[in-house]
Length: 78
Image 1: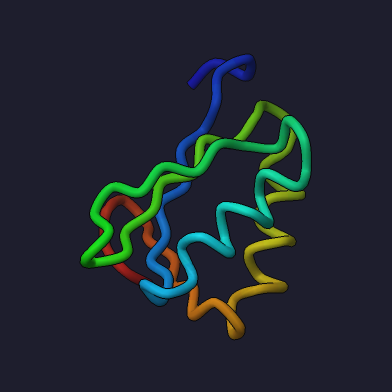
Image 2: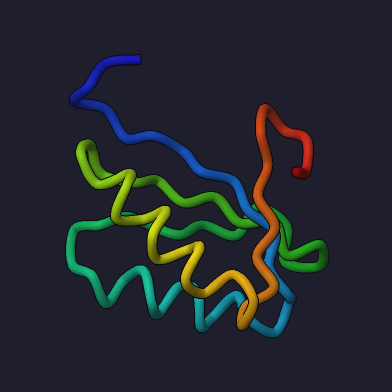
């Protein structure tokens, strides 16, 4: 993967937390863009800006319990 391209992070959140997750990520201008893949399953893709991956992961881990975030690796839940 090129260093100058966005990386896609896939997570699952509680369905009621999709909007809050989107608001949190968008509050960090330029960090990433949240897209809901399936609103019923609450699968979310986050396109994170190059060089911002560590910051995004810090935020996601910090909000993991509150938003019910579950991470995926290669399409499989962890």
